Image 1 (cartoon, one colour):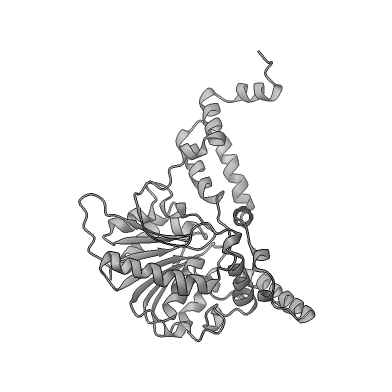
Image 2: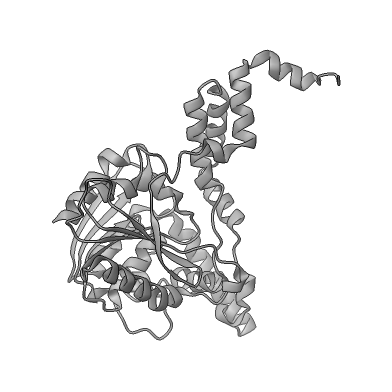
Length: 362
């Protein structure tokens, strides 16, 4: 038998066998520990790499309300909407009596470098919402968008779909030059303009493939938004290795945070040009070249939810939306939490979801 290393002996001496087993499972079999995505769904349509999910009602339920379509942001996996059995947004909305659908944007590679904002807004969303209407038998829909999914939701509505009745917008970006993050974006915008002036070439003149942002980079960027929180999470894991439920919860959160999805190159070009440099959303315009549609045309009922501790989309960056949609019936609420927690944080089921459910039921 090989001698036990000094480090292994120290770990064995300090940790009971239960903690060692839990640590081993967390490191080697994290997928088996994860509690995410337990709500049954069916894929009822596909368009390129994009899929449309339908969440059938639970046994004994009969949906009797307006269909709701969840519009996620790009770069995230879908686990965020079904993270824990007791913290599943899809299960909650389904149980409120809504025919429930979710657009899964898929996992773009370099072969999807040509995907732009216009690809999602004028190709994928019209096609998939037509499938929702056919499947549900209802024409009038509600959209539920988070982060850039909120941008896709309100921009699609501004393009002129008259049958979007309600918009739920969680942490919606709008004014990229406002707030603390706005200073960085203004600096970046100045640098982009200087480069364009010096080279005579704009962002969209470069190869789209060069702008592809891989999933690992998005995961790293998300964690660097709160490095202290990431470190504390692993420290607390080590302190709670005896607790199997705690280890499973850590693995579940990591299944989302460690598995971000890539941004297509063309989409990133649009972000840099239209959102950060030109800040078109704050001017009521859409991030599509040559598009005349304006946010002022939106006449839906709108609920905007912002997190008071959101470091990614600060409340001031979202609040501009209210004045840009004068025809809409807007409500804005500010809740405790950050960018992820306003969707599926531990307080969301009691502090946010009931408000959303009440709004969708009006």
